[in-house]
Amino acid sequence: MYVIVGLGNPEEKYLKTFHNMGYIAVGDVADKLGVKFKKKECEAFVAEANVKGEKVILARPVTYMNASGRAVKQLLAKYKTDESHLIILYDDYDIPKGSIRIRPSGSAGTHNGMRSVIAEIGTQNFTRIRIGIRDKEVNIPIINYVLSEVRKEDYDLFISACGRASDAVIAILNGASVEDAMTKFNG
Image (cartoon, rainbow, N blue to C red; front, side):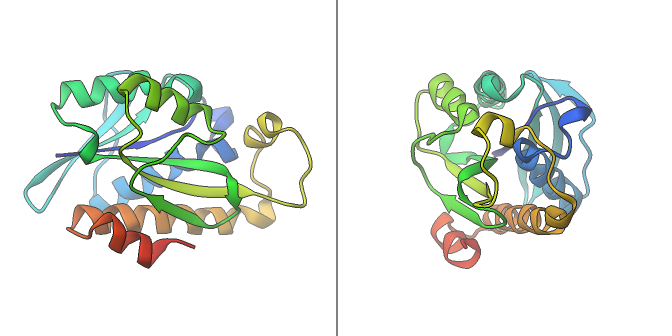
């Protein structure tokens, strides 16, 4: 069983912000698997799918970004799975806008949501798919930037990046190794 979590903030005012790239990407996964986020449990909106006979849980925490780890920990406990079957999708200010980076493990970097996940589950050894949001032309504090709306001229770029991130998740669910997904989708 896989648990796929898209990090973001639950209020509608955050819907088109940089910090909600994980929410958008996990929504794309749900669309591609033909499921909807119908129930709320473990401090998250959850959708259930089946891929190749294996149950897949898709989640959007409602804890807000900086406490995302609480929902992730609860989901792993409820569904009796461990970090080897966890994939986190999230925005990353440390990589250029529109690119994605898949990694099998690693630190939280500058991301408070990932700090929360790592602190709550006690490991950094899980797959993460980072959606780049850094724009060299913008010079404002990170906190203001990540909570600002994506500019109209960049919206298609970010929607495309979220689509590629969701394609990477689907590839992994269909049996691709994380390394194969990295080779195909990173960049």
